[in-house]
Amino acid sequence: MPKGYWIARVDSRDPERYKDYVEAARPAFEKYGAKFLARGGATTTLEGVARARNVVIEFPSAEAAVACYNSPEYQIAAKIRQEVADAEMIVVEGV
Image 1 (cartoon, rainbow, N blue to C red):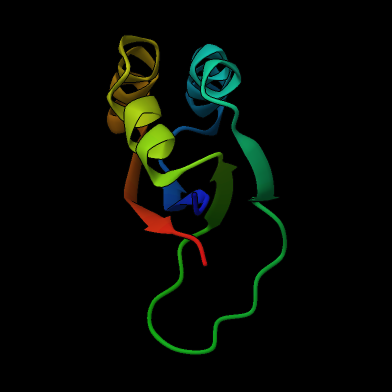
Image 2: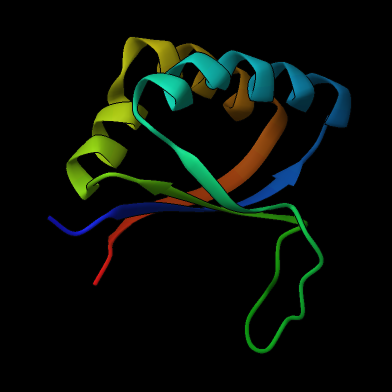
């Protein structure tokens, strides 16, 4: 079964409260086997408009990636993130 990946591009409007999101999301990530591959490191924009924070998270499958997002645990964190940041998030199936 191919792995699944969250790709998130984020601009935080409140870096201190964004830390609350990170902490609140931890239980969901642990439950669904998330492995962070990129988490806010240095970027080089090649095309388009960049966001300040870029994250790539690997999951055992695309189904697990979607289930993590939809989980009650993550939805608590998502509400915090939506209050303090602008983001695009997608799930991509691996090869």
